[in-house]
Image (cartoon, rainbow, N blue to C red):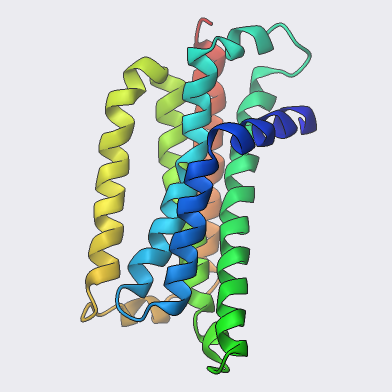
Length: 207
């Protein structure tokens, strides 16, 4: 499992450097930009959430998946590693965003970082939701067919993020009435269901 995670991190360093730079730029601008702050922040998490399914696509195109099937890790472990990677990336973007916000606090606006913690938590949650939808589609359809379905799902998701991020007058007060533990539990349950679907779909596929 750790070997698979290390392999993906090496690939990310070489092949996804441009995406990493975009995520860093978006998270930086979201900390210091007034207008559109929420939109930029949510988009940074959206870009990070797209990485695991992109890696699955890359692995299938270079036939790494078929090669890995002959190695000790099971298909279930290969799927689990992608979910762990997605969780790690989402938390990393959240931590980087928090660092930018703490830097803003240090240069003269104390307390701003603490006030933005709910938006960081929302970004992590939205990223995990996107992962929960993209990965089952990719494992079920395969990269060649998912290349059509996944952009549609991602486009709809990104459109929703843009709508929320740009709707300054949108009344989200109803969310404050929901107990704090409900949304994290719902996201965790969806993530587990998505993982089980992905494992089931990947085990049934011919490599």
